[in-house]
Length: 146
Length: 176
Image (cartoon, rainbow over all chains, first blue to last red; front, side):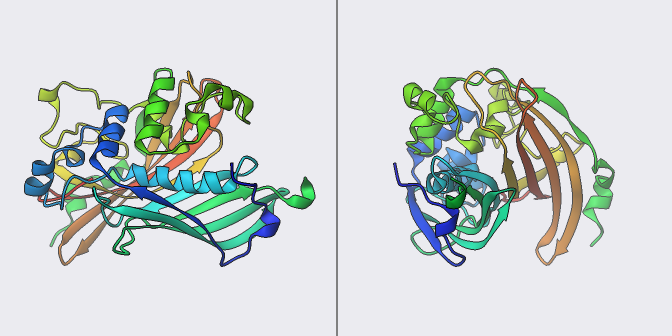
């Protein structure tokens, strides 16, 4: 477990440690199977390419939300938590992509005795293309209040 | 170019409520497999002992699993009853006449999390259409449909709020 990050120790403009995710057909298949998502663009390559004009099968956009949740829940630690997540689906995440999920703190405030941190978020592929930009709100513990 | 939205007559669906729907109890197996799919190795998703010792006192689902914890009403159909694209329903596509004559892509979403989903929870979703707008551009017409959903558990505790914006356009090539 990473050590706990505290509200007191973060500053506006700071980048949080990034998370790397590989997009591949096995993970996509696991995902659509477990949630019963039968949209053929996620598993039928000839259909995706020939009928829908896509570069390949594409990862469900939801997976971006999961990557951000993993990034921010991991960063917030055992005493912090993810409160809000906003996502915009701009470019597809496709097999072979190596994604960097990152964030930068844009604001920090104390609300009801709890530390609130706002972040701009990005998921970039290996070519630097932002696939799913986002915004997050994370609650962090305050050292003085411990 | 005339208004596609006027032609469809969808403006009146602002405020339209989705039927409330309660899912079956959430399975530990589904949570574990979901965590594998998203490659998240947090033990609170699959290690019962670690999860019990943690702050939630038991196995919980990844936060973004919330909409799947209910299941998508109408998604479970025989193959012959699915559209060519494999879909018959989708979160954020309202059940209004003509909806599936258009192609849909997801524009964006906003989630607010209050409490996590636990194993064996029965999650209820309630939702309504909050906005229907149209943008006529060079490459054609886009229709934006926003919906707001709330998720509660069997104890009526609020788990999450979810705003989804879907974008519809006349079918040619579209995705997601």
